[in-house]
Image (cartoon, rainbow, N blue to C red):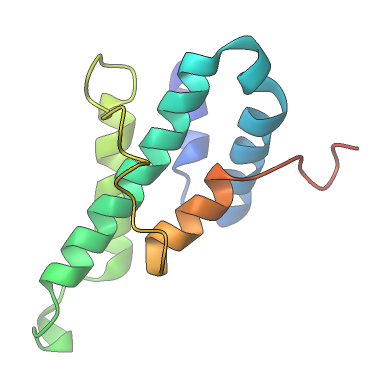
Amino acid sequence: MQQAFVTALTHAIKEVRWYAAWGVANHLWSIDRELAFRSLNALATEATRIEQVRRAADGVRYDQRRQIGEVAAEAASLVRQGFWQAGAIAEDAYENLDVTEGFGAEANGRILAGPGPYDH
């Protein structure tokens, strides 16, 4: 169950990611704040890693860059592997997330998610 949770947070399908974020927003904050914070920091960690690799490729010919899907899968895998290990997800990852564009802005949307569309 633990691995399914972190897999949903970092899933390749955006809809699955959103439902996981809504679950954290609706249920986890009230019962396990530490896990809720770890979840948002995991999302920030993943987005930051993708942006770091993407920015490192600036100036590199497009046909020589790694595909963004490959980079995203690698970042998700790193988060999944370290999610349940103490210290693997930085407690200040969200504080260091660039939310102004790209993957950071997208992750921030999920982090700030309120109730889902079916949670009235």
